[in-house]
Length: 256
Image (cartoon, rainbow, N blue to C red; front, top):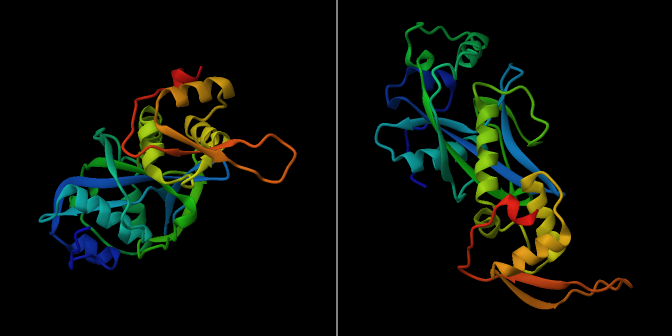
């Protein structure tokens, strides 16, 4: 991640600067997996009952991907996250809920109505699927709470960020095999049941066990290892691990 010594420490500094690319921003939809549930990381604005995905503006001398990594780190303290561009949000009405205006008014910051902060912004969306248990998040000067939410139980969202989450989830589902293999959400050795639970959490519905196992094994992405003995009387399941460098496209319909 590129370091930039011009990072703004508060909202007033950000508003007063001319260092940013006009009309373009970045937003990061960060998904996590916990207790068989898919979650998304959100930030709450100070003094507003509104939540947003982590994001921000782009410095004039900054690469787009570097801006996404920097803003994610500034807002959440997450670093070394593999972010992928998944969609560009450019609806002319996407900022009509006046979140910026409400935020500035609550901070008693007066800004001309023609200021760049009130103008139209096109946002480049990034997403990632990360290990929930390894996340240590902290609010920054613009936010007071940083929290995980179930993707099906979202709070009041700022701007068009609910649509961002929906688009990000669609992208995640379309690329599920690649995302799961690269996410490190499972231990190095895992059971078929653990893998199925992860797929079900992302796809949002149960899968038929026999169909899932047949399709997964047919993709030739797993190496079967020794059996996992837990000491119970039940039949011990085999352990598996991903074969390095193996990716085969798979879709939700493959398991039906």
